[in-house]
Length: 166
Image (tube, rainbow, N blue to C red; front, side):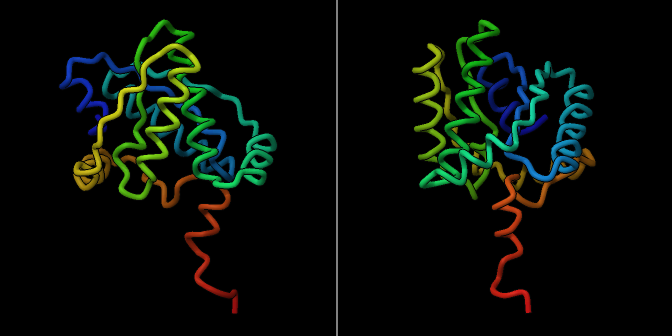
């Protein structure tokens, strides 16, 4: 179980995972991440909802026109999550992004709160960054695939871009 899910279960919440990642590029990376989530959810008996859509053209268009691509990504993904929670009659939602020390937590909070207001559900934020190393240990012990970049084509580029190709 991820530290985020365990943290929320420890707080008395029932947890349902939602996988929707139109930001992930290339397609094979999306499939690899989804497979890891499906296997782990099955192993834990964790309910999992999957949005199989992959509107990469729309997503890239949105990112290219955004002033801040990461904020736009958070806005879009948390809006979809809030919408799914509302559709399922779940009054609260959160995100596993709260465990990453590499993500802008203030932007995540703002995106979650805005999405919650839009769909009439409450965004529940917990700062799980102190458990980041623990989450790595747990995922490695479980043999779970760990992605080497956030997901979008730009984050993949940025992890390699150190200067020039020469």
